[in-house]
Length: 327
Image (cartoon, rainbow, N blue to C red):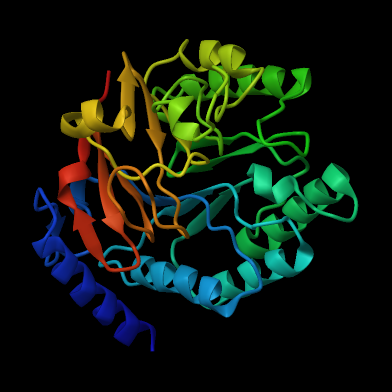
C-alpha cells in the first residue's frame, strides 16, 4: 500500500515539475549518500509533524518513514525538530509512537520538543514535559531526565534544546543555558561538527520576523525569544556548528531566490550554519510549495552535504542542495 502511494506521489511530483521553474528535482537518483564509502554520518531531518489522531496524518508520516527505511544505505539517524504533535495530548503522542513502530527509518531517532508539544489542555507544561519524556523513550528507546539532552552518533554530538514553558516562543532556564555552554565545550574537544537541534531558529534569522506572518511583527517574533542572543553567543564560540530548526513553516529557498522571498533555508556566518526545515505535514506558502520534505545530511572528513529531499515522493530537490566546507 505504501509503495503504491509513493509511486503515485512520484508521478504527481513529476507532473508538477513540468510546470516548475527552474527544473529542480532528480526523480531517478537513488536514496543513498553521494559517496557512501567516505560518508562518516548520514542522517535525515524533518520538522513540524503536527500529529493528531487523524489517520491521514499518520499515513503521511509513514510514507516518509518508509522512504527512509528503504534507503540503499541505512540512515544513521532521523532527527525531528519539534512540533511532533499538534496539541501535546496523549492520544496524539500515542498515534505518533504507533506510526513510528510500523517502520524502521534509521538506526537512531532523535526527537526535539516544539511549542505545540507544550500545549496540553489538562495540566499545562508539567504534563507536557512528562509526556515528552515518556514517549521519547517509547519511540527512541532513549532514557532522558529533562526535555533537553545530548547524545552521540558515530562520534558526533547532537545537542537537543527545549522550551521550559507552554508558550509560542522558547523559554530557557539559566540551568539549561549553563548546560548548553558545558555541552558545547565538551563536544568541541572532539574536533568534529556539532549538531544543535532546536524547534525555534535564532531571532531575526531566515527572514524573521517578516516570515513569521504577523501583520505588525515585533523584532523577536518567530524565533527563540528572550534567550536568543545568549544562545547565539554560545553557539558561535565554536567551529563547525550546525543549528537545525523548524517552526516558521518556510519552504525551501536557495541563494538565487533569496531576494524574492527574503530568506534562505541555509544561512552561514563563518563556521556557524543555521538550517531551517520546511514543515513535514503542511504545504508551504513561501518558497518551494511542497510538504513531506526535509534535509538529508551527509558528513564527510572535509565537508557536509545538505541535500533537500521529498521523503513523501522519494525525490531529491537538487536546486536546494548545499555543500558546507568544514573549517
